[in-house]
Amino acid sequence: MKRILIVGAGGQIGSELTTYLRKTYGGANVVATDMRECPALGEDGPFEILNACDAEAVASAVSRHKIDAIFNLVALLSAVGEQNPQKAWAINMGALNNALEVARQYNCALFTPSSIGAFGPTSPKDKTPQDTIMQPTTIYGVCKVTGELLSNYYYTRFGVDTRSVRFPGLISNVTLPGGGTTDYAVEIYYEAIKSGKFTCPIPENVYMDMMYMPDALRACVELMEADPSKLVHRNSFNVTAMSFTPETIYAEIKKRMPDFTMDYNVDPVKKAISESWPNSIDDTCAREEWGWKPEWDLSSMTDDMLEHIRRKFASENK
Ligand code: AKB
View 1 (cartoon, rainbow, N blue to C red):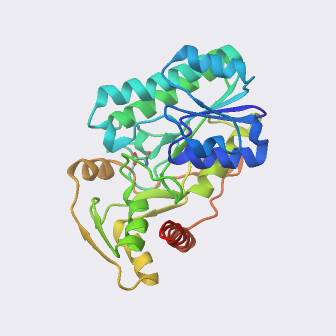
View 2 (view 1 turned 90 degrees about the vertical axis):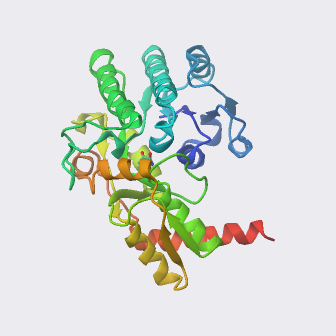
View 3 (view 1 turned 135 degrees about the horizontal axis):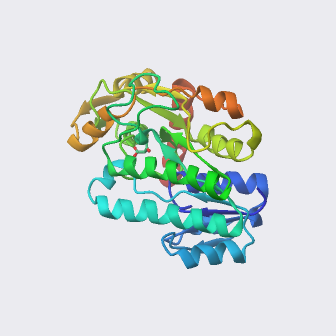
């Protein structure tokens, strides 16, 4: 990758991936784009307003900036997608379709995140394999499975270098996620520092895979730089770092903040979605085909999250 376009750079992944890529590939070589103004993304490299569903605008950005790799990060997440399935399909598939076509026309590599949301209640629940039954029950999951198939089709039919990972819930302290089922695992840290109490929308015993953002950023780059001759799979690789329930993450925070309390007000939509997803996924293929290995676990992530959020609130309250 030499000249990179990030589509949907203002979201949870993009806001950190932009900085990460700019450090490696040079600020001027990473063009960040989003529907909305994102002043921070224009500080150390080019930023443009771009509607990912406007095919001509995407093609123009790729051509003007001589792009050779696209990161398509546009998505309405699982919980918010259920409020308006038609809109979720139009945005998620519209952005992917345009990215695939432009990648084909301009000979670009393309990274698109998939998700544990691509699995459903009929997938094996524990250590869910790389290749297995995928019958998701959310529109988000339907888009992800379709996207994986379409991306593989563009690779085999047109030779487009499409690659993807199935991300678990991503935990970060820069930009809040929005509209996901796993968002609680970010919100709990903010509430621990802000108010010392958290009301959890997910049932206490539901396991979901999670990953700290520094591992997720590394996964994106390591997969895109991986030797293509070693890749048996492409769209999309299971990757994970940890799996826990609300009770586990609560206990981990409470170890460090003994006065922290948590109660439950379970959201029926998030309950149904979380219970339809795997307890844990098996990422052996990613480990074998491109050397994937997470560096953060629940304990080290909890230390880091609490420290960063404490500093953030302290500087905001100065
Ligand atoms: C969501 O909860 O919708 C996302 C995901 C796991 O893809 N964070």
